[in-house]
Length: 278
Image (cartoon, rainbow, N blue to C red; front, side, top):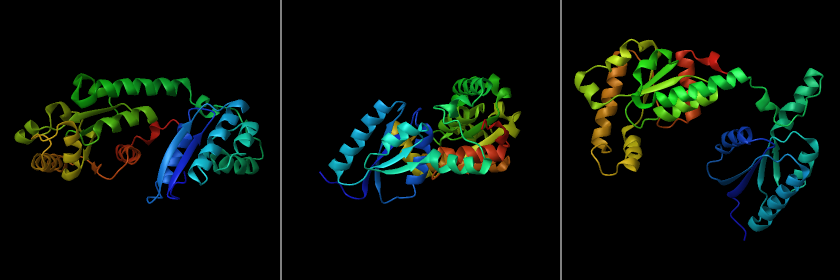
């Protein structure tokens, strides 16, 4: 059955996890807002036999939908890549687009080793990430406040404004020990930040959000409650922003920002760029 030309299937094909190709594809496809994309990730395609299976699936999709699927690939083995490229699809070869020009410019051939991008990360960097993830989980939502001295950054803001996912992204991607601490009505009544945070003021970064978006998020968790009402959300957001402005704490609205954008801004504002492992 033919589908609309604005409904396209996207295959993410890699000899590894496919995360690199998937991340890149998200950035590229987000530029086409009028098109509906269905993404299919096919990781660990590391043999010609597996490549044949991929070709069959892509070709069946092309026949069923009446248009070419789109393929993002980070395959490095030339035999496997050549086999996959026999499929009826539009191919976007990420390694080919960047590795070949580098080979010409550097005057040397790349290794074409499967999984090399993962092996390049040192064991020390890997351990740092695991430690950072454990730290962020232990210090989520104001838990275990005695360990805040070890934090690289402490995110503050009202409940459900994006503190937890940002903390975990910073930990997983960059090995940053990110704690997060909620601002609650009791803080607004006292007209002061939690006393636990005062000695760590130089590590604080505030996240805020439009009240209308906050009430949508909270209603998913506690529908038709005072906690999720628009009036309560407006009050908490206004009070939180007032406290952060008064103490000159940098802040960012998460309303229209991706986790990647929020994390990058936090790193730049707090001076954590040095933590990047790449």
